[in-house]
Length: 184
View 1 (cartoon, rainbow, N blue to C red):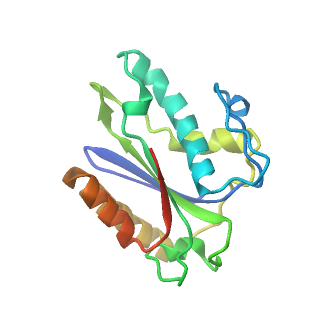
View 2: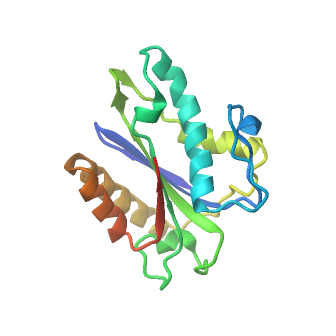
């Protein structure tokens, strides 16, 4: 899986690409509680929720020791679709994907610290768990050096936006030029 990790003293950003799966996994299939079973192929929001539920389950283990809940830790997932006009700043990650393609990229944010403890970086594990449990469509394609450079630039800008507040982060996400869904 092609992916990028970029971090500063406050935040860690993880960027990767994947195909939307053809079926949803239930929370019980990925080792959690509750459920989000669906009959239809999942959309950007349901895949983002599946990723976030899995990440929060893995983060929760660390936070239990300090009596905190992962829902408040500040994890975020941005699921980006191909730019309708092919002009998005991360378009190289989509290769030749059409606007109606099932290929997506995700940018995940993990604060480096919360409630006095370092948060684990769980995103690689999240994708590994989901791939093992049957979401085989969460596969990606190799990306070009140009795509990697554009990803590093975008993540660097994102890291500089977070300390300036929520409005600056949304402005950064809008500047990428891709339709997106934010899951918190």
